[in-house]
Amino acid sequence: MSIIDDTQRMLQKISGIYDRRRAALYALSLRYAAEALNDFRAKQSGNAYWENRTGTARDLVFSSAFQDDNIVGWYIAHGVEYGVYLELANDGAHQALRPTIEEFVGPFFKDAKSLFAG
Image (cartoon, rainbow, N blue to C red; front, side):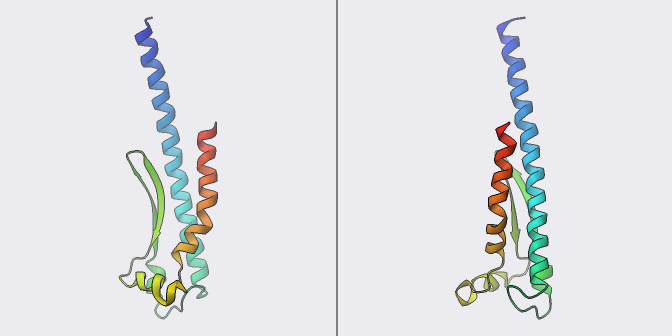
């Protein structure tokens, strides 16, 4: 065994650990995206943020996770063109997505940090 072989094996192990943790972080992101969406829909079913006239805006809110190079995360967004007005009208009095994200971002970061602590 040479030092080069040992170094290559060590680099492969490090790369494997990184890949597994990144996959775990993506899975965690998918979970939080789903939880945030379910929480939003449950609250908005009772008109918590704005009055549902047709239900279209509520039903077309969606969420997902993403991974790009070294970035992994999740989001929740409106699927209707007027979603931005629901969020920003009346000085943001009826915001739905920001409060939903703020509710879940703290626990998400705590869980994400725990993936890399061990």
